[in-house]
Image 1: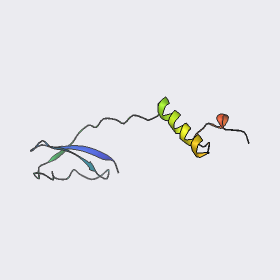
Image 2: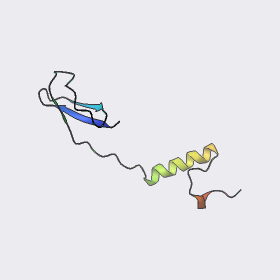
Image 3: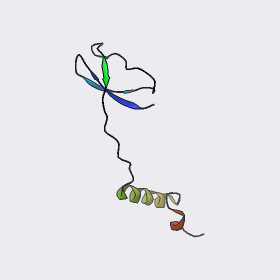
Length: 76
């Protein structure tokens, strides 16, 4: 289920709600007003060099090579 940002048209408060795709927006929990779906920022893909390097270091510490490409795996 996706996480959506909603803003109340009456009190102006913003909240994040976890809703099914086909669910309509619920009433504001603070005042009962109408919630309007907001455009959310996109999450970064998480494939930066630093994240990959730390994941590889953790895999090496744990003794497995599943995080490496086949060409980079240690030959047994």
